[in-house]
Image 1 (cartoon, rainbow, N blue to C red):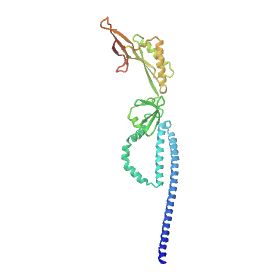
Image 2 (cartoon, one colour):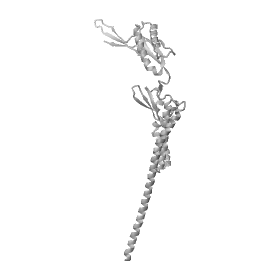
Image 3 (cartoon, helix red, strand yellow):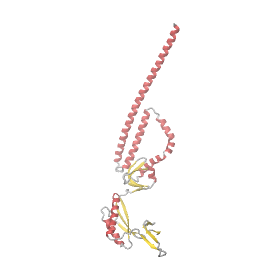
Image 4 (cartoon, rainbow, N blue to C red):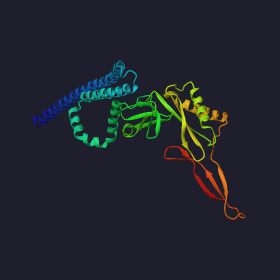
Length: 322
């Protein structure tokens, strides 16, 4: 009988020990789950606070810079500074969330520091855009609202951020140019000055009165209400071409009025020259006979215009046998 009781007692003791271990494990798992739930809840709260703190910091930065006289009317600096503040707040909030979840951020920072060289080489194009964006903000060759030309692409600046410059052209096409390309190319700021000069070339015949043609063009410019009186409009002979005399009209206007006034002066000058009876020559063809008069082959001489080294247009003759 005693031989049966001893194994039974051992089995009971083993069962009690296993039950105690299971209870301890369950209690430990319960504590871990509770701690994780608490940490996860706190991490979510930190994340929500980070979002609101980012909005608050961006608004505070915008209001603070708006009080400064140099940045009050410059949306370029405002938008750029707000983006930098938003990124910094989110980075700080992400580090706090990772720490609350038990991630050792010091080791992560060490790994990132060790891999920074490889990351920098892999993202050198992106980092160069960020550096170029900072330099554009410091040098300020243009601001939001300016009309610029970068590498032959013209448009109105809509936004300058960390990586790109966004523009919109006359057809309302969205143009995105990397900041590194902007900084490395020629920047032509078409609206960077308050005034711009209009220059239009008109062609008149060699037999016309040049002074009369100049006076007609000058009257058209002086009669336009958006042409500035100082500097006064100027006209002059700027080219002696093969089939015409080139007369240039120059007038100064405000930058915002440049396109429309140029179109008005071009149309008004053409109509005024026609009304004054002054000839505006155009390309023509001349048939020149040569050789046997019975056969009479002809050479067609086509008179057109070509660019001279001085920038004026001149005519060219292309002989075609007919």
